[in-house]
Image (tube, rainbow, N blue to C red; front, side, top):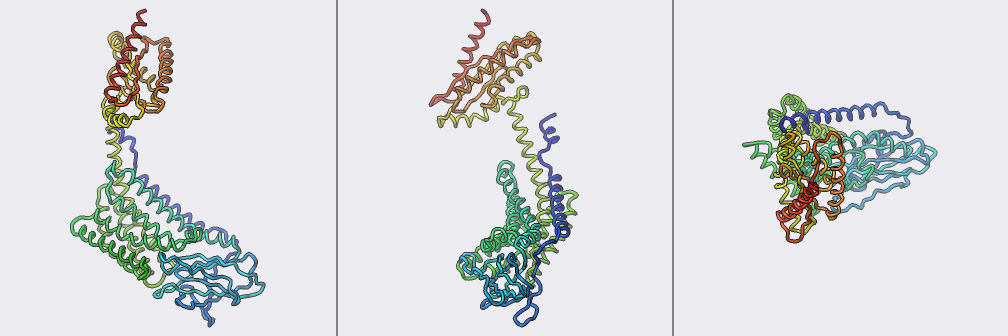
Length: 556
């Protein structure tokens, strides 16, 4: 079996298995999230208090209508009583929150925001310790919007025992949090694969753009989940990272389209990329200079995302027609249709002010996009890596002696550049030359099969003595060489030779042995100014000296 056939039999990568594994894992996570959300016990003193709020006139009030940037908007909720363990959890978006109980202030929001992050704290969790009240009382929330063109909102309100509220929040937000971490992990792993293998196996640049876009999408979706702010609390930082990630997505999509499309589509994608880069640069400068915050220019990014749809359609058509995708093209097209639907619904709901679930549709759209791209890229990278590993395998086979599995003379020639560098910088470098005695005699009198057995026994002894501490080469029929580059090379040589003598004595003591295993050796430690050839020659001289001594001893 030749190296190519051996490699085909033992493939190192399999895109079908990977793609199916990812799909199964995603379906498992989805089933787990739905099942746990439906079936987990609700034995808890904590309750969601998102409904039942009224304004100052006693009229029903929705918690997405905190419109005032000065003075704030008041919302009231009556509770029967407040125990010593009761807390109020609020998740507020783009607004500051102050809390009163029966007109007594119990919580004031931190309005000190670093200028880099703008005027909004982003999405922030507020944990309010409430005073004990035995009778019914009013909880008053005063919300002050951060932006003049959009209302502040409270997404979630939980009321009850601290532990129960904590558990309830974790249950409600765990699935989205796990999913975003999963996407982020995929993106980071893809980036790592590109960094490690792109030079060696010539991976295409579009794989890098797809990986970076996946990371940016995951970061953007992450800031919309409960858990980042809930556990870490740095809402301003997440708010800023979310904007930067969102701004980078159109650029990466444009670059991906440039690499994937041809003709007019390619030129259009280049123009789109230039526009996306200009939007990123201009809006960032305006934000950092304090002139216009990201919030007021984010509609430009939404427009760019919508404008990327034709390029996405064209890329899907290219990918689905690739023969490496094969029978998966119909699945890709179905996923893409859902992707467009979710993306359209998400952006439409955002533009029409339905903020509460728009991110869910965007996340599903991004998930579908990721599945489509992965399905193609895994097939592509599987082909590239298989060819690369096959080429590397064949190259390694060309440098290896078929009988002993040592490096051959060609392998030594390839490694010589590395050894010359070690010698040039004066590093420790030693060479042991070996010669197997009486190989010709065994070949002539007992046959080449016995001669090969002698070579194998000799190479086994050399490897057991030096294989873990040096590189072993078969330089010719009965000639071997070992290179030692450690600081203690001479000690390693002496110990290894002692082990080799013991090995030869054991091999020669076998009853069925028809020949003796005798190996001559010579070791030379390089001195300053020595070349590789000079080191080999001097070790060779010492080896032949040892060989003459062994022959003289045999005659006695």
